[in-house]
Image 1 (tube, helix red, strand yellow):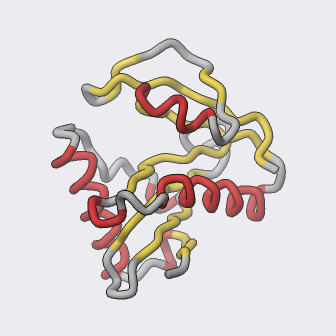
Image 2: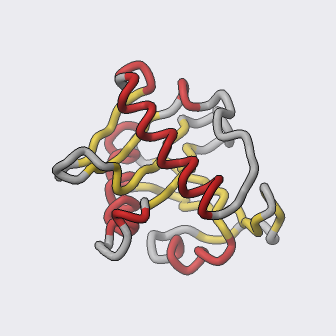
Length: 150
């Protein structure tokens, strides 16, 4: 298994379909969250994911360049599929996405809109909560920033 890091233009139609299907399965179906996933930001993003040997998606995250959603680089749509859970892939995904950001953008700040119950998880990667809790798509969130992604 290896990580895939591609721009929107580099994605095949099949890859894009698998990524969108995983996002819908986790965020829309599992979390019962009705929201517009196709928010117009995917063409600006870098997409990071991991598949198993059979091509099933296991983990995914979307990285937006500075000035797209926030002044900082941002990470979003972070997920581990049902098939990928219990393997430590959430932590591996975050380590890899931060590595990729550092490689592509250098030492920059990174901002996320995190589900509030995952604050401790993101704190383990150097993120600090910088907002009060707020509702986003029916789920309590907080903004978190990592000041310097080495």
